[in-house]
Structures are given as structure tokens and as C-alpha cells.
Amino acid sequence: MKFKKTRIAIFGANSHIARTLIGSFLQDKDNILHLCTRSPDKASSFLKAIGESGSKNYAIHAGYKDLYKNSYDVLINCVGVGTFRKLKGDYTQYFTVTEDYDNLAINYIRNYRPQALYICFSSGAVYGRGFPAPINENTANNIRVNHVAAEDYYGIVRLNSEAKHRSLKHLKIIDLRLFSYFSRYIDLTDGYFITEIMNYILKNKILITDSVNIVRDYVHPKDLYLIIRKGMNAGRINSAFDVRSSKPVTKKEILDYFSSEYGLKYKIGRDLSHISATGAKNIYYSKYMNAAGIGYKPVFSSMDTIKQESGYILK
Image (tube, rainbow, N blue to C red):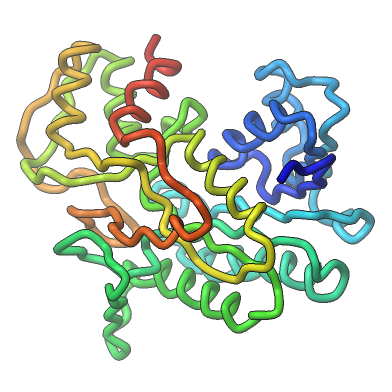
């Protein structure tokens, strides 16, 4: 099924995920994008940088006050609250920011355009923290109700959001649970393991990391776009999907690649040097393949993603 001039509103248009989607959607001339952001100048600069400045297939909106002035077929919520470094300990933003923009989208489709599809980016954190094994269909989020820790907050937020969406079963809503994501547009100050590697290569410094051989699942931008298109073609749907690459990758494989290809210097030393606001996750990927039900089959492996996207940053 081919969409003719599908009108798509993207919340948080300057976010890492949104930028990769914008480039993909604009290559398909059958879409009209409405980019909602509190920093329209940044959005304009980005579109100019990717050679899309002046295109008739997008409009930039300063904030969200114009939302009800337009009719959309799809709303994609890419609003994030930032990484551990950017939060600076203010975990209340998990709750307030997520709830504000989620309710904005839900109110739009409930009261104005109930036939529209709402796609919300969720997270593997919905399963909780401290995974001893890959996620599967029956993995439980075990929250100690009387001892809720800061590392539980984001998982609770995402679980609450998804539960709310499932209760609105008469509406078209898809939650996409991302575990790890990497592209050329990532913010190198985010403090993730992969961004630290980029920084240490660029600065020609020695990376010191612990001996834990963590496992990550980096979804390729083209696979992310693929699952969104599959969701748009799925008809009336209200569900959550784990977004997977074709194969996860270990830390050792990542270190070996960058050491060989880019001369990364590293030493095994101190304990966990990368703090996660959602708790340490040594094994962080899913084997739950329910997205196959809408026709999603990832093309790229995590290592494919790393090799291709890091090339734009390092070369």
C-alpha cells in the first residue's frame, strides 16, 4: 500500500531519533512532515545541513500551539528527557515531560482525529533493570514497591505510558521499545559507551573500561524507518513492539573493531565507568520477535550499524 502525501507530525524534531527519521521520510516525496520543536532554528539548520532546506515537503512549528490547526495521519513522539549527564539528577523530568507530550498526542487523536496513528518511542527499560538474560515474551518488571530506587523511575514511566495506551484499545497506538540506537546524528556528549569510544578516538586518548563484556543491540536507522513504515501499513492496531537488529554485539567485538579500524587505544581497568540512570544492564537486548507480526524483519546487525554510522563521524 502506497501512502499519498501522508501528513506526519513529529514531536521533538531536534532529537537524535527524529533527525534520522526526518531524513528518511523526506526521501519519500509522498510525505509531508510537520516538525514540532521548541528550537525551530536548530531544525532549520539541520535541514540545511542534509540538503533539504526549502523543500515543500515539510513545515517547522515553533512549539505545539499549532497542533490542532492541522490534520495529521500520523503522530510520532520522539520527545526525550535526556541522558544521565543532562538530567543532572532531576529525575522528575521522566514523569512530567513524558506525561505532558504523551497526553498532548492522546488528546489529539481522541478528540480531533481518532483515525490517526500515534507512534510513541518507548524503551527496553520498560522491562526493569538488571537483566541476567535477553528479554523474552514473559520477562517481568520486578519492582520492589516499598524500595523504589531512582534506577526504577524510567521503567515505571514507560510501563505506565504503555499501559495507558493499551487501555485506549479503540485508538491506533504503537509503542516502539528501543534498547540501543546509534547513528551519525548522535550527540557525542551523551555519555554512552559508544559515544565515549567516538570521543576517545577523536581526541586520541586511552579509553579505560571495565572487564564486563556487555551485550548491546544497536538498531540501524533504516531498520527503524522500516518498522515505522510497517506500523503505518498495519491498519487498526494498538500494541507494543520490541525493536531489534538482526544480531546484537558484545563490547569486546566493538573494542576489537575500533582498535583495528581506527586505532582505538584502551585498557581494562576500573569498575563500571559508564553510569546509567536506569541501572547497569550487562545483557540488554530482546529475543521477543512480536514485530514479525506486522512484517518487520531487521536487515542490519548491530555491527553493521556501528561500522556504517561511525564512519560518518570518524571519517
